[in-house]
Image (cartoon, rainbow, N blue to C red; front, top):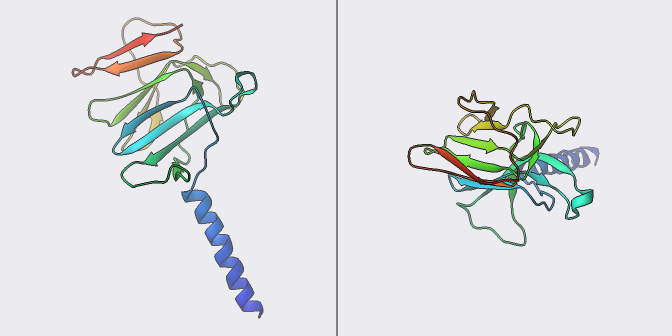
Length: 166
């Protein structure tokens, strides 16, 4: 009787572990960003509470696989482990390179993930989609102040245009 119980316990714990890794249930959020690449809806950061004054910042980075059918009442989100955003950010924009290999995270209210203090040391981050790595690009040209509540678009030559801002 002892051995079947141990096997049941092992199977139960294994299923819970697999479920927690493969199935992710993000909290409600607003002021986040999203982009579609390779039939995946990628979601970046935002606030995780409906109340603006009692919101929690997040650096979560997760996706929904759009190539598979899903039930709107039971959506299977998947978190991208160990590759969360370098900062907690909201009111920013994301733009994909022409070949979808690089995602640019630009502007917004950026907060240090550890201290939650505003951190504008880098106003642009890049995510290399094939290798799942974040980096800070070296930018040339004029500097610009932190931009909030912006939208971006890229043209056929690879030039990114930003509009909005306050």
